[in-house]
Amino acid sequence: MVIYLSIEVKCPKDNNTMILVLESEKLSDGTVKAYFNYRCPICGFKLEVERIEITRSGEVISIKKTFTPPPSQQH
Image 1 (cartoon, rainbow, N blue to C red):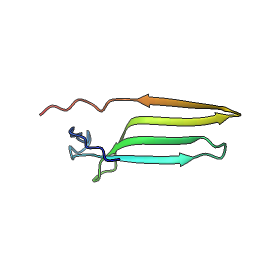
Image 2 (image 1 turned 45 degrees about the vertical axis):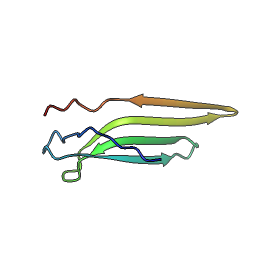
Image 3 (image 1 turned 60 degrees about the vertical axis):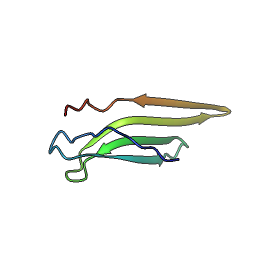
Image 4 (image 1 turned 45 degrees about the horizontal axis):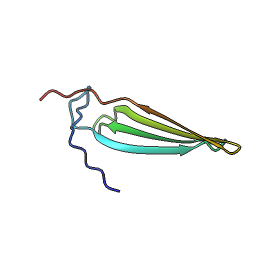
């Protein structure tokens, strides 16, 4: 799947264009977490945009999603 984004997010620290990065991890209890972050390639500053957490307890699967829109950009 390819996703094209038409918004440009600027780093609040140095005003460089940030890139969208997907990071994921699997915890020892089986929980899986995925994070969508905008990251500045120059200074490393991160803005978390979305977090998805998947847990399983017996036959029940829980999905928790948190979304924070990036700050509005003025051109």
